[in-house]
Amino acid sequence: MNYTEDLFLLQKLKEGDIHALEVIFKMHYSNLNRYLLFLFKNELLVEHIAQDIFVYLWESRETLEIKTSLESYLYAAGRYKALNQIRNNQLHETIKQKMTASMQDSQSIDTEFEMRELEGIINEAISSLPPRCQQIFRLSRDEEMTYQDIAKFLNISINTVEGQMSIALKRLRSALKPYYFKLFFAA
Image (cartoon, rainbow, N blue to C red; front, side, top):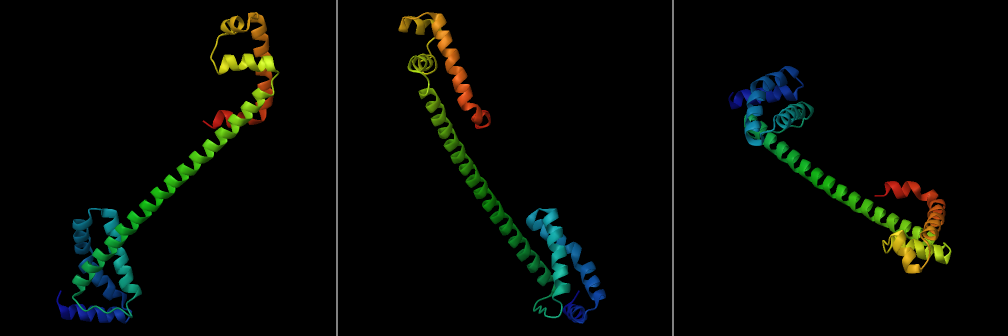
């Protein structure tokens, strides 16, 4: 296609002749696609961009000013649109990654706060136990002593240790019942 034919088709396009757009499309679409595919190696992106360019030609036909050949204009428009699309995709990906990281940090802080809150509730429940019961419970849980070792250490029977642990566990279960959901699903 030569410059005179380009001017004629562009003039017809400006006048609203859809047939001129069809001729331009048939003459340039496949070459534009190949050119863009060579540059960007993404067939879906290339097809989308090429179609957008022809839509833009039609929508802005009345104000369109092309100073070069139509083919040069289409190739330059394709490069420009593809680079913008890639830049926007990268920007969106960066924003998405930052938002995901921020959400994870927020969830981590929330989880840490909830765990501290639960730890406080558990310690409060343990502190509310009778002194001897509390002592036996702490030796069992904090010091990881066996019932037999606790009995020897406190010079009491194993049955007393078992009884006190039973009381401690019942009271703790009762005190922590409203928090079961957090206890089981916080981790």
